[in-house]
Amino acid sequence: MSTSSDIRLKVHLDENRVPERIDWEAEEAGIKSQGKAMLLSVWDEKEKNTLRIDLWTKTMTQDEMKVFFHQNILTMADTFERATGEGKMAAQMRDFAAYFAEHMLGMDPQE
Image (cartoon, rainbow, N blue to C red):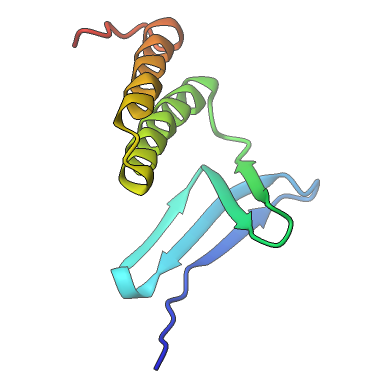
């Protein structure tokens, strides 16, 4: 017997169809929250291609976007390593995240 779990996204738009707010909910995990940006990637097995939706609200600042991307790079490295066991490449991704943090966020990579 198969089961399913729903994740709901609702994008609120202004009169020019620019995102103002992103609501998301995952009942099974007990999550109901609002966001200012999202990156959604789905692997299309038939086409062997990644389908994606990249959205951010008009109130998302450039500084927030830089932090958002830095955190996503780190998350992708962790996920890549768990999914493939490719620790060396994941380490390279983390090294790039440190470089990104230093140059885009002014963070010391040694911290």
